[in-house]
Length: 218
Image 1: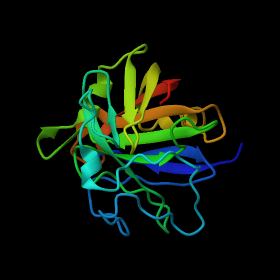
Image 2: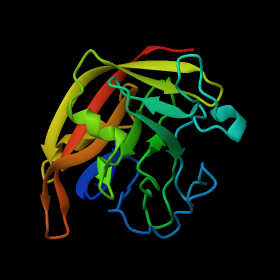
Image 3: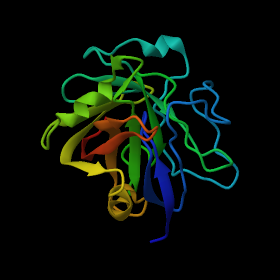
Image 4: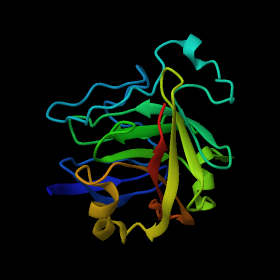
């Protein structure tokens, strides 16, 4: 397995990690060069390729109508009801993966829904601008609970949480090959930040990482 160094900062977080075959950076909430807010699915940067994926983000506003269960297409819903719009992002030319543009969005990178191998990584803000984000509930979610993703057509993909992990950002590099590999079994990995907030500009000191396995598909 080949792995390169990965720097991840979710919301006000900066951590180092590894993702097989790619180097990416999720910066603190600042303007990221090359990170345009539209279109929703950004083009891959030169020399970077994400695994084939089921399209998550609807292409027209009409498809944003909620399903009979109340969850709009192109969203992830956490066990306690927290819901975020999924925004597909690829690496920029300098190896940066842009963070979500909004508190109610989650950046999606890597494998697609139901892929044979590899991690589908979803990252979201724990809070921003004095508001709490939907990914804040990752700190309370537990194994056995379910995460539901609706694709662009409203197809329902259900993942079951199998592991929750809290790591100081300095601990993440040695765990990252296991957590984020694109070579291992397929899984959904959701990441946010939290813990103590430092005033030194480093943001939150901890990461919350929730891993889920595919349970049912459309």
